[in-house]
Image (cartoon, rainbow, N blue to C red; front, side, top):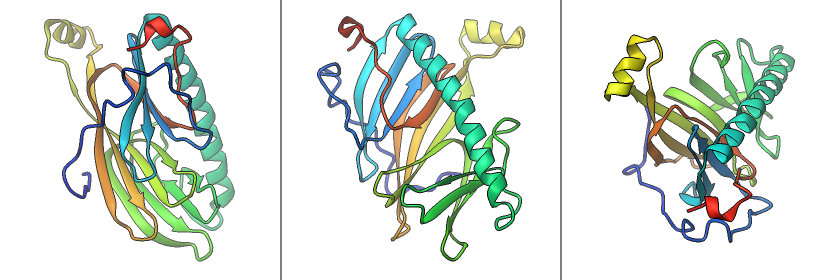
Length: 224
């Protein structure tokens, strides 16, 4: 279940025409989505709004992005699991944790992401070890923070399987083709208000993450 304030909005395409003229911001936050054909970079504004930063339809660029993301996901899972292990004497039964940049808040999860989908998380104030927010979703892909620690970002995925002939054949062979919709939930830490925005729909066989910088093709001709 996802809680939204207002309707989920589609991201702006501003920046699509000039994707390779843009330079990333040193304090930026991005969502990267990739499959074996495309890679998309979305910039997240301080209010949680999402806009397309750059895109590439190129097999080499896309597979390179996926390789980077798979490697970083493993590193992130190890880091978050290690951080949770050190905190289990004060917060029990947690499997992963991620502190805010100012170290005043801690988002923790109770499912091992290596074993099952993440669906539940809690946000703690570290000075009092009290829960300030509870997050429930069908599938939590990644968490992140705006650099001012004022906004918690929750990237969610909602999927179905392709019913195209290729999808049906893949399902019969034991390899169904998943089609994902990605949504970003932004939680204002002080007020508790939430907004959600559709980042992208209809993405086949993809992965996504929240990053501090985009992944872009080195060849400007590969971009849109």
